[in-house]
Amino acid sequence: MNKRTDTIKSLFTAPQSNPLSADNASSALPRVSSGTVRSLKDSFSEVEKENEDLRERIASGVLVVEIDPSLIDPSPLADRFRDDDDSSFEALKQSIAQRGQEVPILVREHPEEKGRYQSAYGHRRVRATRELGIPVKSILRSLSDEALVVAQGLENAPREDLSFIERAIFAMHIEDAGHSRSVVQDALSIDRAEASKLLAVARSVPHDVVQAIGKASKVGRGRWQSFAEMVKDAAALKRVRAAIADPKFAARETDARFVASFSAASRPSPKTTSRPSEERSVLSTSGDKIARIRQKERELKLLIDKNVPATFAAFLVDQLPALFDAFSEAGEGQETTEA
Image (cartoon, rainbow, N blue to C red; front, side, top):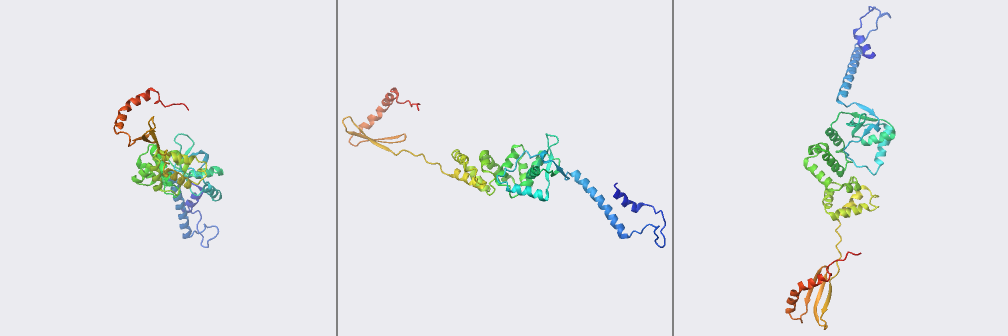
């Protein structure tokens, strides 16, 4: 027991060594009022209550400890994109610098590296305290991989700043890590149908396109689903990647990048410009008009002149095999490969 506890108990158990005098002389023990006794009893009970509470907190793993942020690695499953706009992070960092870290993060001991930790949530707080050079307040718990994912999702999924595509990619990361669909549902607090929609979008939009667009916080499920359907077409995806490659694309804000990508995907493919039909006359060696030819791309129409006997058409058809053989033997059917 500590000195305070010994003192309190001595007030109730110590024997009286001197008799009380009738006039309350200085040699007698001072009288203790009943109110003071009750107060001391309450204090003693409060000490025991605090000790019991402390033991429970240690046992349940909710004790807040301070850890060097350089020893903390992020969760193996990313649930957020790196924000292009660091203004919100700078505001968080300034708040911690001025008022201290008010909300602790959740960590577990690193499963592979002794002396290190993994965070379930609070990655930005880790980054802020690391840059400020101060320890980060943390709740240290023993968490399985599945428990880590669920805790991470339950902390971040309900927050308004977690966009649809971030949730979709997080769902895909959970499933790709070998967890069941039910873990996806628990981590994001969604039903099976919503989980299927998130995963369908995440698996339809290529990774490089998602990374180029970013979190697109103002874009909801409907437009992402439409975009995911469009980029299944190879020509549409090619147009999107061409838009992404434009140097001006990266300078746009994330929602504007989605709009540019969506516009590129939905733009109709330019029609192949075909040559107009060519028409020319075919004359005999004597200069008489035999027929007219209309040619467009690989299509050719031969119109026999009305003054030519009708039997000429049948004769021409009969001669086509021999004409083609003569054409082939002359080497005219071989396409040149020279530049």
